[in-house]
Image (tube, rainbow, N blue to C red; front, side, top):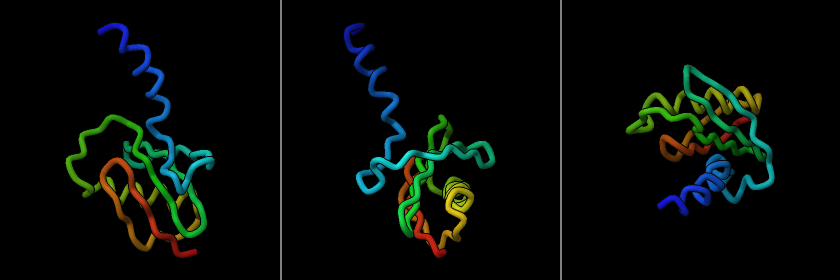
Amino acid sequence: MTRWIMPLLLLLPACDGGSPHFMGIPPTRVEVEGSVFAVRVKGDLAEAVRTNPQYAPRMGPIGGRAARAMEQVSGCTVREIRGDQALILGLLTC
């Protein structure tokens, strides 16, 4: 069992790695109402990866917080969000 701990710990920094479309874009960390997001923006799309441990069984309030985080980083308006409570994609209107 202990031989698996080190490899698992090495994988943890990759938890907020962007999806393939956002690879290579450094994240901007934003906190909104207790939720912490790693936000990446590319063109008219933004991605918010929730990085803090938080009980979130559904998108509900997390979606609104992610949209505000994406707006702070991009300077644009989020017109639609998609995804789940851990990885949210925002369609931007700039």
